Length: 162
Image (cartoon, rainbow, N blue to C red):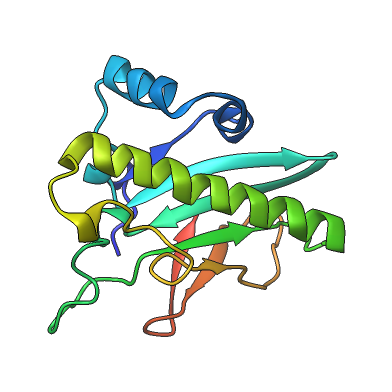
């Protein structure tokens, strides 16, 4: 997967918090106002903070959501990676992270319907726990080096600079 700047769409650090308290109509209006088609990007990066713990959600392959189950699909499987730099997760934080990922899937479904319409029943809610699973890779972060995340589909490594 190419992770150049033209393939990555970073969101502001407070995006998920704002997403949680705004309506789906506001989400659509904001994206139309920004004139950004988020489904043109391979990676969506969303920083997240809860109770002083910082992490990042990386949404991979959202533009391929309707195609990944088709025979012969060759791209990366869509997923949500949740990267916690210091891996200090408690039960309370895991619940918060799962709630945030559920809200991200809801947001993705709303944005998908806004772009592609409501013509096909099967594409009204393509982002589910099954089609867009949450994964929490574990690894070590070394200061002054890129953070490497395992690509779980081919077991190769690719850098994502955090």
